[in-house]
Image 1 (tube, helix red, strand yellow):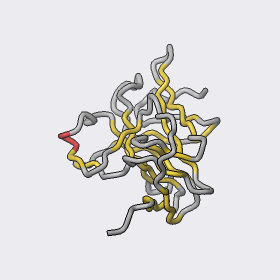
Image 2 (tube, helix red, strand yellow):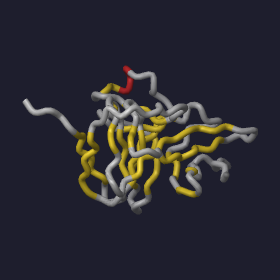
Image 3 (cartoon, rainbow, N blue to C red):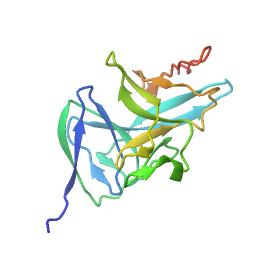
Image 4 (cartoon, rainbow, N blue to C red):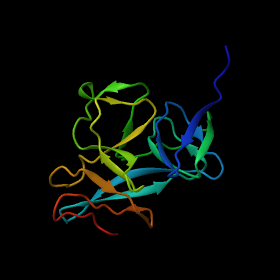
Length: 173
C-alpha cells in the first residue's frame, strides 16, 4: 500500500477546471485557485466575487475554480494550517452523489465550454454530482427566473454575469 501524497488534476484545453478535496492541498506553480462569493446589493441582481486564494494552499473542503495552462498537475496534500474560505457559493462532494439526495437541487451550475469554446457556468442537468468537482449554487443571489447559464469574464476579480433571461445581467463592480 502506497501513501497518497497528492491529488492529480487535469486542466482542460480551455485552461480551467474545478476542484473539491477533503484535505488541504498545495497549489502548483503557474496555477491559480479561486473561490466565488455572492454579494447582493440594492439592485435586483447580484455580483459573484471571484477571489484568488493566496498563500499557496487550498483549505480542506474548499471548492475552487482552478486556472492554468492545460495539462496534468499534482496538488500535494499538506497539513499546513490555513484559514477556511467563508461564504463560498461553490460546493462539492467527496464521492458521486445523486442530485435528488442533495440539498443542492435547484439553481446549480457547472463550469463547461459551449460549442464556440466559451467557458461559462451552465445550468446543471445531470442526475449525479461528480466526486471532487465543484459546482456553483446561485440560490443566494437575487436572480429572477432560472438562467440557463452564466458567462464568465474575469474583470478585477469579478465574474460579470450575463444570462439568457431577458432583461437580466449581472452588475459590473
